[in-house]
Image (cartoon, rainbow, N blue to C red; front, side, top):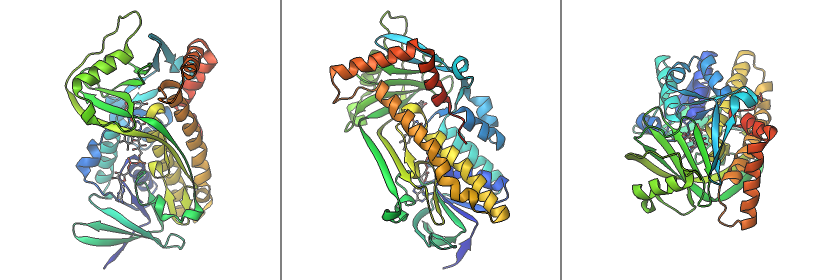
Length: 394
Ligand code: FAD
Ligand code: PHB
């Protein structure tokens, strides 16, 4: 079997793997991206929608932000709804930053287009099956294609292969520590052909459970409902979804109506917090969901993945240019500082807004008091705004 060689072998063409490959190319470092699924599949998988201030800057600086700036929408705040009333968190006034609403599907499309236009090597329908030799200097990825098994030899392997990939389990169990928290609920997410009913995102906490109103451009709404852990889309006919959303977003004095339309996509996502430490073993590095998961309430999953990629690109480019390993050696510690900040924020937002099926009436009153405090205290609101738009950690 012929063995191919590249500098950096990247597993996974999600946001982390694609941005890493793009940034490495701009720094003159060759890479190959192996992706198990087809291009069509990765370009249409519905996921996140909020791009932090700093991540938008990374995309612009990398020459990959033009379509985001044309088609995305800058959001200067979010709305919190609780106990039938509404409170706006004004990002611009509280912390001077904002976020861009631009779907993960579009970021993935943009990065694939850039990679291919630059002559990049992104191989779809190429599933990595084993990572070997990570404790030596010449790790190898075995992967399967329609043509049979292939081998890619590299200087470094970066696993950007998501939570269920093969990267993390390739590290010997005694070399890593896992931190995990599960939640007794999940999110039912829908996409609907109906103009958004609000200009900004609405995060609603209701006795019946959490709901989120987001958007995908001027004609498409993206909405989420808290559902049970073992719930599935079969339990949720369209009428039931719209009725439940309307109930959870309702304001005490009326005056707001949720527009409805044909639902084009429906899926249930489980909620989990997870961190793998360290994010590296030998010549294998982990980035994005392969190393950490957050519940989507704080909109951090995509942003963490992009930050990891930017850090790693700088570290690997420095190693490539000078042979100096300092930044590669520091990658895990540097990335984990931001990861743990996001882990705290995401689990905090989740607790603030969801109905805990095991919680008591006392817990719900405390939750209301907490939301009341955010609505009445500038410093409490500012903490939310700073975290949501993205703290400027290196
Ligand atoms: P991924 O986007 O998961 O990419 C990993 C890639 O690796 C995939 O393309 C996969 O096919 C590929 N791969 C896996 N195994 C192999 C292999 N063996 N060989 C080759 N390729 C492989 N975040 C939010 O902020 N808001 C949301 O609403 C939201 N919704 C989500 C819904 C779902 C169902 C999921 C799974 C995640 C969601 N997230 C959300 C999180 C966010 O989308 C992720 O944090 C983000 O996709 C992470 O990017 P990534 O590049 O690390 O991983
Ligand atoms: C989305 O638009 O998909 C979205 C927005 C905010 C979140 C999670 C998901 O917190």
